[in-house]
Amino acid sequence: MEVVDKKWIEEHFETLPLWQQSAYTDFAAMVANEANAFPCIPARIGFLSNHLRYSFIGDPREEQSIKALAQCLKEYDKCSKTFGKYTTHAIFFKTPDDMLKHFDVEEYRNLFWSILNNLTKFDDVDWPEEIPTDPLHQQWEFCFNGEPYFISCATPAHKLRKSRHFSTLLMAFQPRWIFEEINDSTVFGRKLKKLIRQRISEYDAIPAHPDLKWYGQEDSYEWKQYFLSDDHRSPTKCPFLRLQNSLIFPKNEEY
Image 1: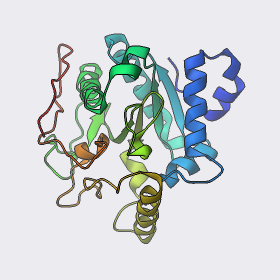
Image 2 (image 1 turned 45 degrees about the vertical axis):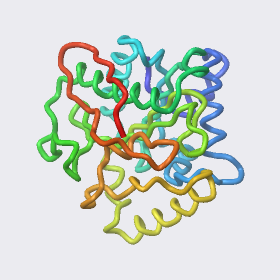
Image 3 (image 1 turned 90 degrees about the horizontal axis):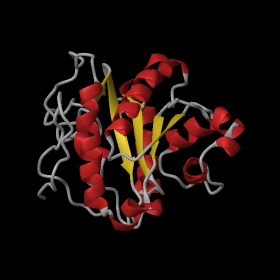
């Protein structure tokens, strides 16, 4: 599996499997629609400027798919700083009909955390010293191959929170370094946050989730923001475990 850009996909579009064609077409329609309504402005800029990179991966419940994800993240990490300041690695998972028909938001949440937990099985680089290993620390961030990432997950089951809805399971890995100019300490960051929040209120059927906060803020927890509920609920504990040996799929968490 490769890490490809917009130009490559469009040049090879007709050779791609139908599910990959559909996933890319849906993504392009979402982030770059003519109405310019998608809340995440950096994602739109990144798409139009060809800063984004993409990988297509199989059924997310299979170990071979997690291994493929690990390989793609390592490949992306090698050159990510050359792709542009709005880069993100968008992962499209093949989502079979049984998932599309029967998985609810909480089942996708459990699957999301099982992917991250099991991904660590293929991480052979030490956790960065500057990033806390405790998810309850305000500066914790998921790390892989020595790179801290903010992750945003979208699923077919999200309905009210349209900004977290997508036709397949989608995980967007954003390197922490892209937020150097987009944070609460910069005028640009504060203005962008205000504009994004305004767009979310217009785009989604419900207000922005209360867990959405700045990285490092006293009452901010990154893990809560990776996968948002389709309401205002929030998990009571972080499901992340750094696994080393075997694949483990977590049970439903209590709220």
